[in-house]
Length: 385
Image 1 (tube, rainbow, N blue to C red):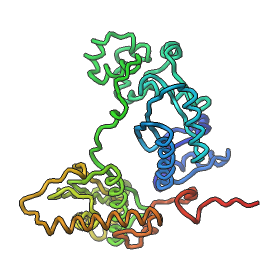
Image 2: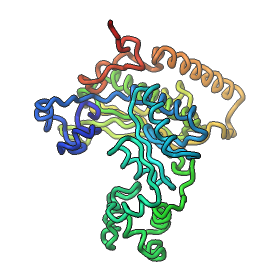
Image 3: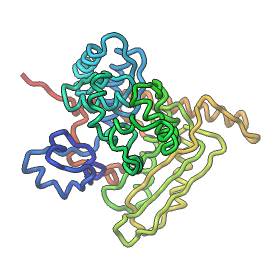
Image 4: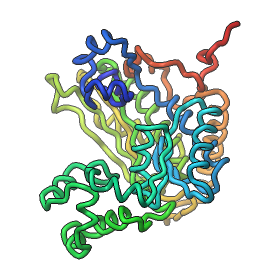
């Protein structure tokens, strides 16, 4: 379920098969799901990130080059026997991490994504050969192809292109005129021409955001600043992971969409004189921005942090007014951040900068959260003889 156990955002195959739609409010289907013995889980992002890290660690040991596309997807090149490699990789990940994975293999990234879709419906691995694809493309709806959805799908339908076969049979000049470079690239990928090279799929990240609704509304500035500190820590962890600094920080503080204070709240931002990923100075800026937005007596429901104008942390540009002393202070605090990060990795977030010990007040509902099997000593599964 989503934050505050509001909507269903991930479903097992069995739940999909009985017709439960994506994003339906949980309370609407709760009783019916309970009757048939379905188990619902609250969001547990720390657990998901840790499992993801473990899966990709195994993949990088087993494969020469891995392009991580998202928290649960990756592309890699195959040499030798593809079926043998797919089975070995699947079995190794499941044995060492304990989570099932599916592997799809084809000539291009787009076809490999479709092969992975077929793998999920079968044994967990699928090699989409040229012969297989020639037979399948006639009955493959274009909407099931990676990158086609929403308005794009409707535009294709408008021109009578409903299946992968339809797209492949259409003259490239027409495709280029109607859909531009994206259409030509899709047509090439579906024909077996690898246009999207390994490592070229993801564009540079433009921003990082961390935001969440409170379990209940609050007027308490201490509680709000505790949440701000939490979201900043999350955003900075991701910022450092991609080895970047931010040039602009934005804070938003919102009220409930269903109350009398709908039009209150808002956002505030500040451009930094120098890009930074240093906790102390950014937390001070975030707190100042919250104080600009905050109105006493207004019940707030949600707060969030957005880091924008990202720069590689190796790129550094001075200003006319910067002194060596400023540089020394910044480097000292970066060293402190690195030390705290290492300690938290060992102690599982035991040092929390900016915390006012109010997380239990504002954190989203998690009544059905699964145990932190891999991130908390207290939740490690016990085996008894």
